[in-house]
Length: 335
Image 1 (cartoon, rainbow, N blue to C red):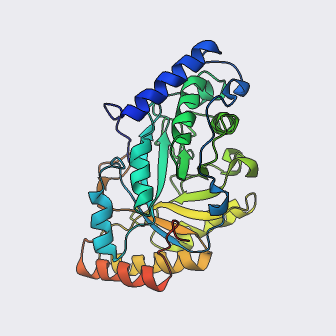
Image 2 (image 1 turned 120 degrees about the vertical axis):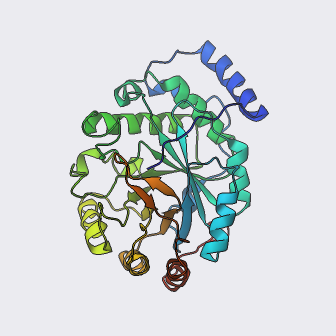
């Protein structure tokens, strides 16, 4: 939902990584070429996520458009939710450098970092054809230097018409090819600390594209991450908001499902909707739920929505009670 903001300035570690990568690339191919150009030339990541791909508990997370270092978001959420988040999701723009120190800071505090990588104005066809390989290699090497796990979502809500990479602008085949390109280069670089999260928006009246053509395949996806909000546009019940999409995806994918972005808009029914969300998610067997704890305009419109859990005493109580009752709150670090 949020639009990533570019960071200015680099950490010393990031600068050194870029310098090394530049020298390596200068001796090899340029921006183009096939995925073989991603052959590992730097040490593989110390962390391996293979043991995390089938979580035994249900995680509770928070998403915001702030950087990993802006920890007040997690602190506020922990105070209001009654427990610290297990997942801290944030947005990154295509072309930005990876903040290894910031992500390590989150992991040290028991939170799985999740980066939603937004292609911005970069053509998915260009990515698929290898024209962005230099950046992919650089990003892969930077992530590999971070000694911890990263859940990575690329070009999320690819079925949303409000995105420049959505169905009105990009063919599903280009999305799949670009996803595979990024994944293949990461694999060739020896990156083992990434959990690949495929994140479509739920299918509804405003998002009608079939999902199967956008699926890169089981070898390229670790988790399915659904995005959907309780509100006047998406829906007001789990059975109508998430269940139809879950059934559609189950026909072609057998992967753990994370509700990667959700929230409940302020209304007289917010307490009931929160209760329905947690109970429906638990019944559906999802591995976690990530809350969008902000006030923000609805995408493509000017209607201000308040998704925060603290909009009323009743909403806050419902969130605390129902999240605990449904078993949401699982430490990846200790689990």
